[in-house]
Image 1: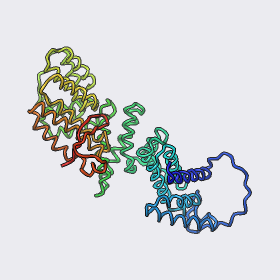
Image 2: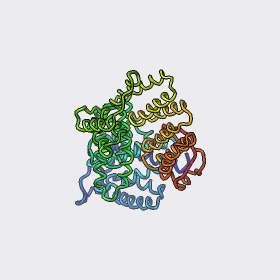
Image 3: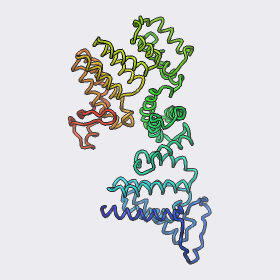
Image 4: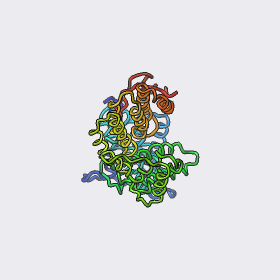
Length: 484
């Protein structure tokens, strides 16, 4: 540990001990005989506060605390954190509630310890700084109980993004969940993205029931809708949220029964209304509503059935495994359909049909079951069955390009770099199949604008053209490209 961190580390240990005494961490104390305390003069304008305030201090201590409060803030403004910390510790140790009204001292303490957390070189140091921040948050709630909902939100946010390895497992989720329980669709905006990710993980891991997960998903959709309506020109944060959370929650459509019929009808039926004679759209929307267990007499299902009958008659396949597979597929029984198409592919000797229905399974995993790794697996298998065929690689490119919200926050570096392997796949599609060139070039042009900039590379000490491995579920080696 370097000398600077050693000094800060021991200072932190000292304030932790002081805080523990304030919070009654000790179970026993030795009897102490002290001189009578100087009389405490309560300032008439200072609100009642359960924590120690400046007005409750002796005149001498109050003078020291007030001076420390002024000096440490000046040092923070100058970013002289080594000077600011001991002054903040003195002010906070003497009167953590300051004048009983202001709360900036808690935010300042968090800021200081986050600075040292980022600079720390050992796990022991990081743990002490993380614990210090937790104690500051808890002290704020003690001094200002009305702040509990906001502090839960802030602590959940920090626990997810910064202190995940230093707080109990599940702490971030519990805090963020408490924020939603308290405020519903009025929840603080910064809670939404991390809570969405943790909610998705819990539902997929079957650690939360569909019913409870659906309740929170509905709250998230409502909070985003409200935020977008009320942001009034200051919408950048809400736009980032809107690009991430709905896409992450959309992936839960792959869990049959998670969303009810009305979810699918509200989301997908307008697409049919805009394309009332497009048989592909009619079939796709019908299957989605059936997956959502919409009954045949649902008004949207009646309209879709009428449109299909009028515009989209296709002779059914002959009796056999393929017809069974299509029946399951058209009924929205997607997992059953995959098994039945697999069975047909194994039995047929027709290579073109093997490839065609293997790729159809890849599309089912992409569009309907929302399992991207399985979709890629089937697409690659289809490509191996038929040479000179670009469509499987086009599908994989779309899988990668769609992974921005799955591999990052929807914007920024982690969400942008998925375009690199996507473009690799589009390039491969037109390389093996010239007939795919027009579509491939369209997608390449569309996604080039979402690539990182030269500035993004510079701050990461990377160069255009270098080899780079994109992580997340993709795990592909590619080359660095920039927008433009």
